Length: 159
View 1: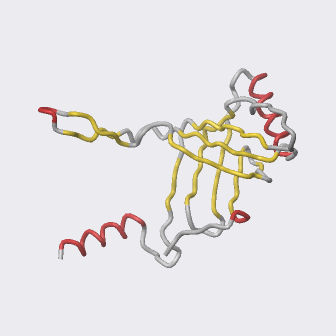
View 2: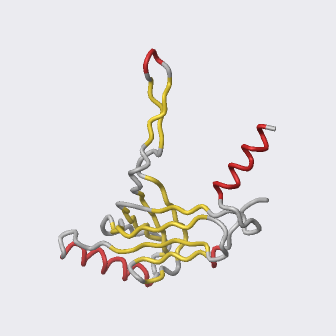
């Protein structure tokens, strides 16, 4: 079964307001969760970095969107408060399938880059999250947690 989503069902909420008119949303971790290094006698070994959950969220909205005004005011408020503005950020597929992402320590990197072109264009805003929580949901037909599904697959492979 392929996982799909409906763009109209994806909700992006920041500082208690729902972002409307988005064109593209990208969420990425700022550090690798795990990496490989050369260990004793050249044997590869895994180094884990699970404690650092920082992330970057980039949201592209159309140039004429009201959201740009709200985000510009939020960036200006943060500048006036000398970086003291942090807020909750939440991204969810309301159809119940896919990734739920949230951070209680999010803030804007600054103003979006300005450019002028022959067409209306868009702006990309960058949110930085000091911490984040990613919740991968299982298929809606299953009541087992994702971990339980993996463990059951491992049990089957040992038979």
